[in-house]
Image (cartoon, rainbow, N blue to C red; front, side):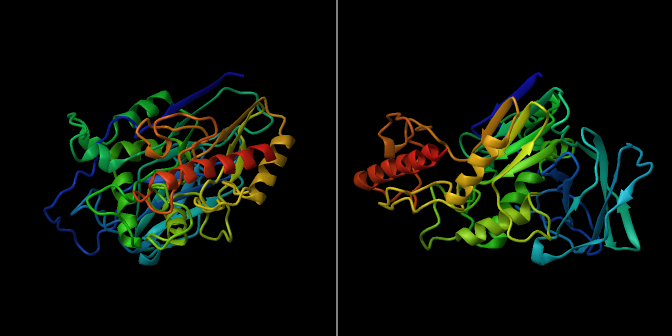
Length: 397
């Protein structure tokens, strides 16, 4: 089997945005309903997928946001690009309480098959239009020895690359990150966003409340190149510190957003769970093909406090560790790839003060209770604490 893996790191190297901020108010009729952020296909298996879209009243950034629109929608899906023999989901309600997002798990699909889908949407069921055709491919499954390629991306810092002295100045900036075009041209089977998909603490104003946090997702996913890529490639998503709370955060402290809010907004904005899922967990594994199985771990929800002196502190938690060990032992895949949103060796940056610029095995990026407040002694405790957590977790394997 031939296995190809593209890894794109450090903010996808260039940016811009389709949604370049337009401070002039854009006049739209109250009855206008659009799908301005396109569609996404998430958590694809050999026989299922979660389809997602968001109803909007505009199709670009206006005053720094993409306003939502109430309405109804359902997904049409087919193995044919002209939607012959298609089937549709039930009607879904786009409401403010869920940021006008609609999502639905579709099951009973065929393995290793490219599906076309589109959104049927409108103000009500009597006034509906069809969106553009999108597509994704289901996983081949354990019985298929076929070539597979995928891409892993981290650090999509919209603010860092669109605004300020490091902003991308290319003539195509309004289309979004140029790297997304390169990824699409490579035609990967799927895309993994490995955390820091947005940066709540990097922008004109840090996000603390739900509407402020949602705005970061809107500006990210309205970019034309993002819409193009998400509309043609299956996706999986993990979260890390910046798209849960803030830099180097754990589950302690009163600084907003809270861990609970960060988790709920991520579940809302990403096609990682169906709206009917109860008590979802974000660590999971997928058997991609006969030769490939991937694991995606959760590095935020179960970790011990960063400043704890407990020698048995953990990044992953006992239950996740048991699951990881057992599923690794159970797998007969040739290639076993663990995709972690949390660095496991480091530092990843020579300027990291908590390491004094010296790399040490097992010293991942230290996670503090609040950013920018550590003295040298506290930084050393964080460094050693993370090493202890990793040692405990990895030895358990």
